Image 1 (cartoon, rainbow, N blue to C red):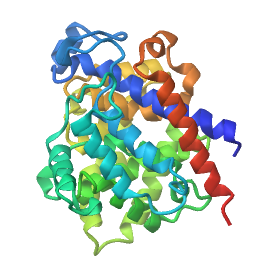
Image 2 (image 1 turned 90 degrees about the vertical axis):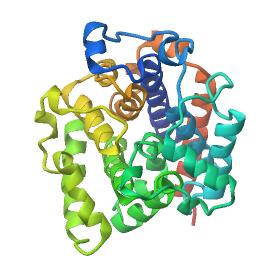
Image 3 (image 1 turned 135 degrees about the vertical axis):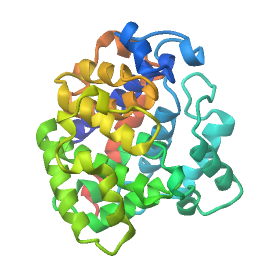
Image 4 (image 1 turned 180 degrees about the horizontal axis):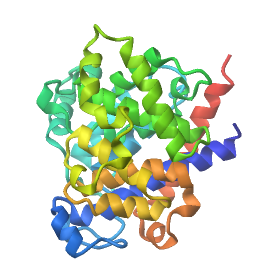
Length: 334
């Protein structure tokens, strides 16, 4: 793959995620009924967090922190430097690193607890809370840059290696296997999109290959988690009615809601607006859907008027180029 092509994909992924996030920030926590009466149709200002239009939240900030770590020399080839990611996460929470306007706002409970533990010196891969009640969407919302790691980009995917890599990165903030599985399924879809498949084809291949792999882990803890993602894995997700799709902060709900929007719409704009208008955890549903929609439709499909007000757009674009460069460098290593 050429540098230009991979850079284009990285830009589409990071910008797509940030735009979806920014669309949701002003209406976060408002119920679906509010969106049905007053649907989001474009960028808004202020609202829930009193931020100017184009402001993205913790979803994008921690995505960019992870992308920075992966963009280090060798970051997309070897085991990611989780200590580096931990430092960046701490700096985000306490020093407003990689924030839209120099202000940190909107952090999940498990993520805050994990970063507090990181600051106290807990090993990064063990910092994330790991009870069943710690399965918020805070790992899923930031995991997309990992799709550019060469484990995930390999011609023949080593599912065990991909799982271990994903688990290590997810566990910095969320240590339960259910959170890792949500990230894993999401990255399977992203991998297929990076290879040029349609959304329908990417979803179908991801769910079938994941189900086959999970069946080989009948004695492992992850095997007992797959029924939680039953609608994703059995193919029934696209046919759900809106009343059956929840958009809360629970990792299973976020993945299902984002994929449901992706599979029922055929443009970037329609997808992310549908995600935001599901209500509740609007910024994260928008971000998770927006990253994949960016990969599916490309940067050109993101409305110009949304990109024009996106905070730190140039910085995001430069980061995407560095991430792609690190990813492509792994192709040439001996």
